[in-house]
Length: 334
Ligand SMILES: [Zn+2]
Image (cartoon, rainbow, N blue to C red):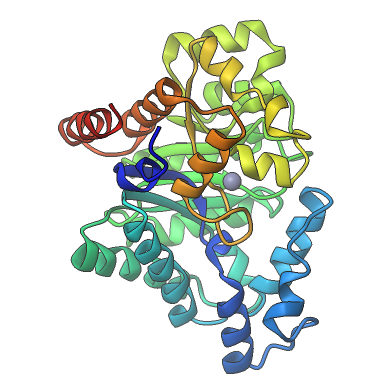
């Protein structure tokens, strides 16, 4: 397989977080202009923190860096910067999870988060033709009432600019079922629904996401494998799993790529696609992820074609366009 193919084929990114796109250069720039003091004040020293012992360690490094995000302009720059680099990587459609509840902890108004990310998507469509939009996530380790109040206050205003409701943040101890009312409310807005489930949490969280939250997609979902009945259900309904193998390695969900289960899940008929989660922290953009998986021997030509088809079918875009993109991707990778 020609190595350029990973960059050249049209791609879609369905599992990426706003804060996960905050590049080290931006951390330094935002810290200076917003007067936020950093423990590591140079790029070189900041980069030394980019190896992680696990999810908690990652969350604390990301939290320190994200504290430099203070204004609508910062949020716009992160999202627009991501979309520009994504377009250069031939990503033609991107869906980005964000939660205004995160910046609000630092006094950033909810409107700044909404307006920053929404303007970035509009400008990126105008400048690069990249489609997609934001996914408004509830932060699962914050009170359910806070997420519900956010939805009731802002969902109507931003109804046409948001693609879906999501659920992310610390997983263990916060089962998806807690957020039933939030997801029911989001459905009345006509939004799609996605939730992180079964990254390090149990298979039961995936059941809750599909049965109680009635999601259209599961983010991660790799822990489904231990529950045969769940695997059958996911296969029957072709529920998309947006899997992020390199994030899983960095955060020690699996020790190495050879142990990762996405090939087994594909073999069992599940609708798995490959995504980056936090590209500023884990190996960059989608083409780079494909290349690394290919070099590790876990992404051959047929698998690439399959995960590409799955990704376009699972994207929140109309069927005609997704068929065209699947054909274009198939033709280029032959
Ligand atoms: Zn994620």
